[in-house]
Amino acid sequence: MFKVINWMIVSRSQLLVDLLDCRWPQEFLVKLAKATPATMSSLLATQQTSLVVFDLATIDLQQAYQLQRLIEREHYAVKTVFINFPKQVDAKFLIHPATTSGAFYTDADLAEISSGFNEILKGRSIIPIDLHKSITNDDTDDDSEHLTIREREVLQALLTGSTNLDIANQLFVSESTIKTHLYRAFRKIGVSSRGQAIAWAQTHMHEVRV
Image 1 (cartoon, rainbow, N blue to C red):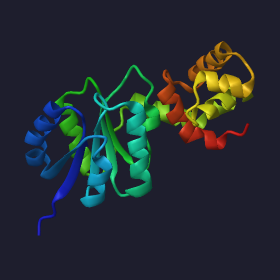
Image 2 (image 1 turned 60 degrees about the vertical axis):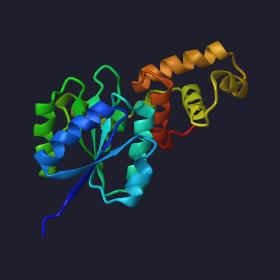
Image 3 (image 1 turned 30 degrees about the horizontal axis):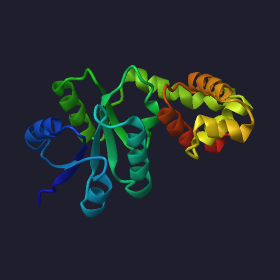
């Protein structure tokens, strides 16, 4: 008996979802479920899904990271793919070797993505070479080792949801000093926003002792 393969697209773009729903079920012989970041968890709990595709053009990177972590914890058999993966922003923290099957940059066209998904269906991973090298280099060079004790303290404080003023009061320094620590820490760990720094810290700070 023919086994139905269930995929899920997580996007806030109805246009993209409709376009893929017209192509993918026939092209890859899959059933495509449509979800938003808010509905993904409940849909995964009620239907068997083998692959989740995240549209990073419409999902905040921090939110995508949290959804990816949810899949790792509760749906370990589900693979993930990222489309519209940013080139100008360091988002490699989203890639998980055991879960992520593919990543396609924002300039990838439908033909390139379709070719990549055919390879993913064969059990292969499709990660851009430069992105794969960057991840590999990170594995051999832990950025957290280059952080000062104060920078580590500030990053850990971000995990609690503290504002710059809150952190300044906790550490008995000025708010401008905290901004300086954050700026230097962001450069060292290769992130450009508070959300990315929080996501990085959630992955790495368990290895950091203050």
